[in-house]
Image (cartoon, rainbow, N blue to C red; front, side, top):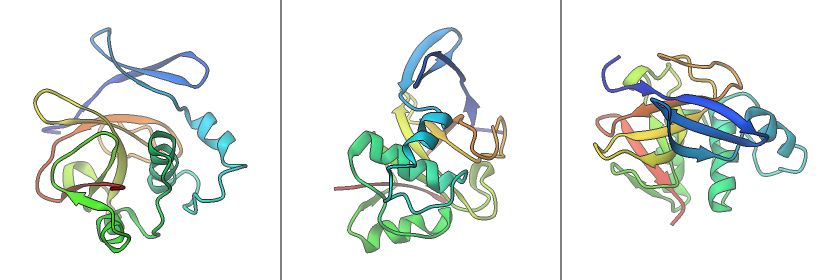
Length: 161
């Protein structure tokens, strides 16, 4: 699929996933599916369904920023929800932010897809972590997928101001 690349993810320390490209560490993600699940017992503000991309994005964004996603809805509705709650919605990425892919864009399913921007690559593409990705190289339900997306039509980035 054009514009999408995947990076290997490996765990060498509990709770730390290293994202690599050709054996070079490019980012560290301090979350694994099991650590997200463990936090669920005390995380009353993540009101999304466990296993879905929305659940992971809300939880991981809170880990990075201290802010919970306050709206509800399917992935394709997140840019609208973000605006309603006064969050920034932009066509330009930043870290940390949440990427929102509309249905069918860069392999997103019919409900869209959300993921966390972990880093911005020199070419402007973004390295993301997320759950429930069934596109190219996807891990599936409640499994971590690390995918690179490109800004463009049908792609938004949202963050708390």
